[in-house]
Image (cartoon, rainbow, N blue to C red; front, side, top):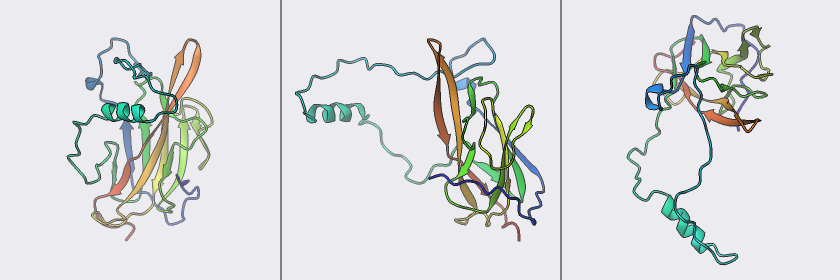
Length: 204
């Protein structure tokens, strides 16, 4: 379950800088397109092989088929937690501005959701605000309409780097808007970075 970031700014929260990150997709690893901006298209495709026929009520065939599709050649090469490519580094009380790359034309923070939540209840962050080109929404409110690509929040406290409390695990709630045969569809995608301190404990 995701936790709401506390709305109230603590009186002793005195942010010392802005940390601004732009979340993006490496276009160099995607098919090149001439048009700009560009979109990511998500769809369902049918498998190329013939599906097996099964006796009514039988599970054995579907289990065998699913096992074959599970890529038996894959093996774990790293059993320790893998950092997210969207991990954000902080080193003092600060504002964190998170921006979704506007060149991905159909990507936004999810309408009707809070664009950022924490995975555990914590008062070490505060004051989440969703931002549009006409201003910022009141702290704590959900993104009220489409085209929210920027939000910010305060990082109040972290333990020293290398400790279990050096970071807070976040969820970024995004969605891709798509149209198919004149019907709008939305694909919700949640990213789970860590907003972590690699320096000394703050505040002291």
